[in-house]
Image (tube, rainbow, N blue to C red; front, side):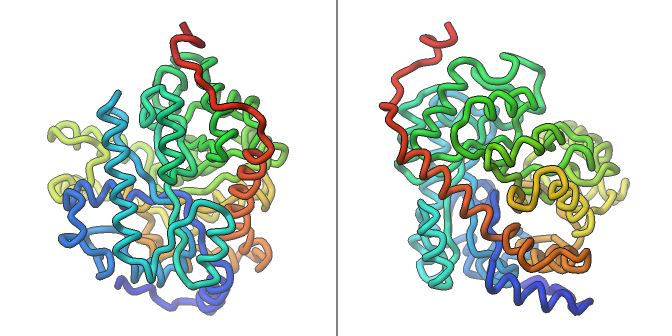
Length: 399
């Protein structure tokens, strides 16, 4: 287990607080890392053992970090398309299900807010699934419903590339936000009780989704654009709409999204990866060796827990304490902040917030209560819905 140095008294207070109100983390890419590193062979890469140096995540470090609930991302890369993307998403779901079956004493399957509370009471880590990117449903509402049946409780509308019905933050404008079919996807997610996740989407898509959704939305792993001007972050105008919607923005730890000095460095590092014939999101052993060589020649700017706390301070000011949370994106990024290096690091962030005079009540909302509440509210909207399952298609609505 990676050691977390005891450097200040607030760290002990942070750990005690997390024992009562553990972290609900909005986004962890362990399933994709298991695909990349071990071909989903859970014997070959056993998360019951310390996997420091290979993964950001394992069960001992989740415990050390005070994690009480995890949305496991069933992400597939956005250069996958059509039925290939759907099949890969199903493989990701199968990976999570096999992890839960393999570690029942530690990981509790969770579909509802009540399940999350029951897992906490039992001392287990509530485990939920989130799909990352609307390409995972291949523009099919029936496939969306199938993912919900398989336990997926949020879907990020896009990943890094546009899809036919929604614009991504990191692509050129396509449909100008959400198309008519995209708005129908949001309505169907409301009917199901599946959270609409607006991380990765363009600001126009954020606005269209907020205009359409009757249920609270989330940002599973995005920080504040006013603090770090990156398109993956949330503009203040959107943060300010969250109280009326009831949604929650979960700050991420990815250095290139939280530290302005890291943005340009990461651009050059990504170009270096592509020059070596590698995808810029690759975290395989070969890819990390390429990264290490680049970093040796060009030392990277280092984010810290204080960097993330700057975002949380701003997000609390813009959206209110009831509308923020945490989504680290561990095992979905090559680099992490120095004192948030892996899932054992959350106490360092909480200690930083305590040092900034955040109250115990505020931190309890940040770590646990807001995320549980937003899922419960989405469930309430679904129960009240009288809409039948939609049979709309991309062609019927968008032509």
